[in-house]
Length: 262
Image (cartoon, rainbow, N blue to C red; front, side, top):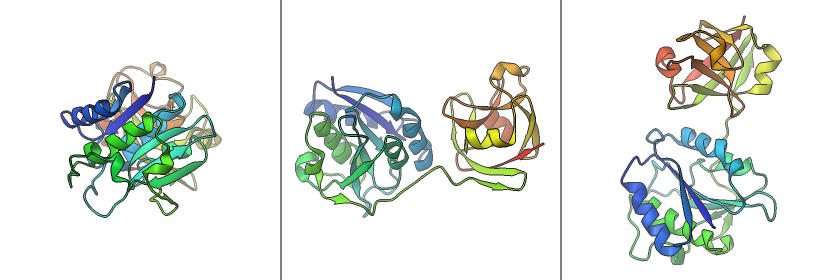
């Protein structure tokens, strides 16, 4: 069964319109909602949501991502093929970096600009809802086996985005928050291998001037106690056992974090 995933900042209502368009084109497709609760215009947050999950999807999945503050402007619409031959996954969405980390984590990518009106909504294109009018139908056609080369020309000057803008400054690891989950766990862009060069489990580290225990899981500290750990995505996370680190530390997506090894 073909599979389409959806990741947006739309909340409710609008994803249903996208699903209706998809199912009119390909009634046999299965649709999975990754999330529709990305922070409004949170491109990096949406990029991380996709990046953290795509490796678990089967070959041939089409991922439609719409976090699109530039909708209706000159920003382009993209379709991407990613991964080794025979193991590809596909991505559809705006040219603002949203899709790139997830696509690149699968391997080699080929990026195409969507210009073919035959794979867009036939009743017309709204200036403000390309998720419904361009991305949903394009993704639906790809899920039916339409060759990606038919969407439009291959391009190389697409907008890029990565999570590697962390640095080491003396005894500090400096990075940023890339996601805060529903539990208030704060996920940074500092990868496991970098953290473990400078600290061991059971030690103390200092995060934005607050000392916390660096442990393997939440239950290794008492209730309501802050901690740091390596999360399931392979990045340093800040958490509070049975609490909300995002609120307690006052952190949100895009904020800088400075971790001092003590």
